[in-house]
Length: 204
Image 1 (cartoon, rainbow, N blue to C red):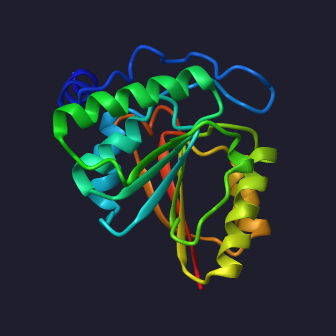
Image 2: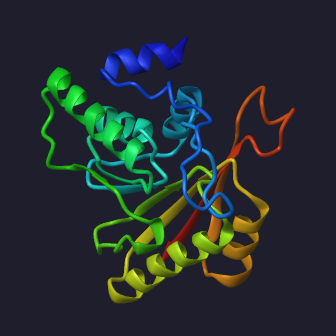
Image 3: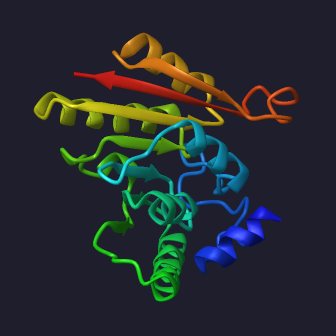
């Protein structure tokens, strides 16, 4: 029921594209599926997000996480989506969301581009991944984050929902990111060990 409740509250539609493929290279880019609202509730109950944070959602789809964070925490949110159809629907959702909430739109952005081509800005400090693409793409994105941190020293977090072993191995063995939190999804983790959230931090 929360899928309907929050979509109605935010005046958006994020349910209708569940499991639809992102198109293009099916080897490296995985089917779109929005993060369940139950998971978002749990994550942000445990993991503090401030108005001063700049969160980037890679493979944002129709923007569910972006609207949730913007509405409840007023953070700057950036959705990166390679699929043009999904991107356009995310922009439509933004228009409907703004019309209902009357919020300012100068801290919510959607970009239609490849994740590895997104330029990490010095303000960006929170990065969310719901297993959107292969580890090859993930490596490129993380390396872009590391390059940005070398240029502008700051604390950055990588948030992984439903984390793939390849992501974990790369972060823990080839980067200086350290695991700071593991959140197991109640009633789901026992049946599926992928149902968890891992938060990795790099602190300069």
